[in-house]
Length: 130
Image 1: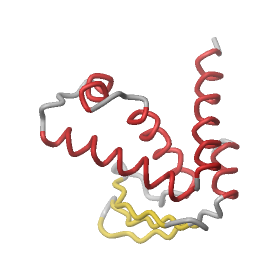
Image 2: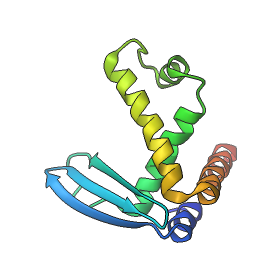
Image 3: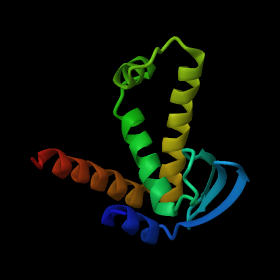
Image 4: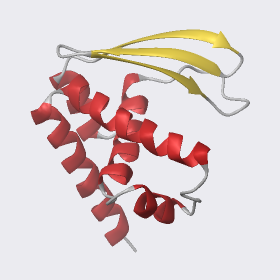
C-alpha cells in the first residue's frame, strides 16, 4: 500500500474488523479515534483474502475523489459513462456522497485532507511517467 494511505491509517488510528457474511461478501467495520464506518464489501470471485484497512481507505478515497470532483449527479454520471436518469445510478451517487462524508468523519479533517492530497500527488506522478 502507498505511504499516504498508511500514514492516514496511523494518524487516525484506524482499526478494521472483518466478518465474512457469505461467499465473497465481508462486513467491514472501520473504527478510528473520530468515528466508525461500516460497509458490506463484495470481492471478485476467486479472491480468498479479506480486505485490509489500507485497501478500504484507498477505495473510498477514489470514490470520494470522483464524487467530490463532480458538480452534480449529471456530471458524475457522465464521467462514469452512466445514465443519470437510472434510479440505481442515482442510488450509487447518493451512496458515494455518503461514503465521502463518512470517510471525512472517520479520519478527521486534517488526515482526510492529507489522504486526498496524497492521492492526487500519487496519480499525478503516475500520469507523468512514460
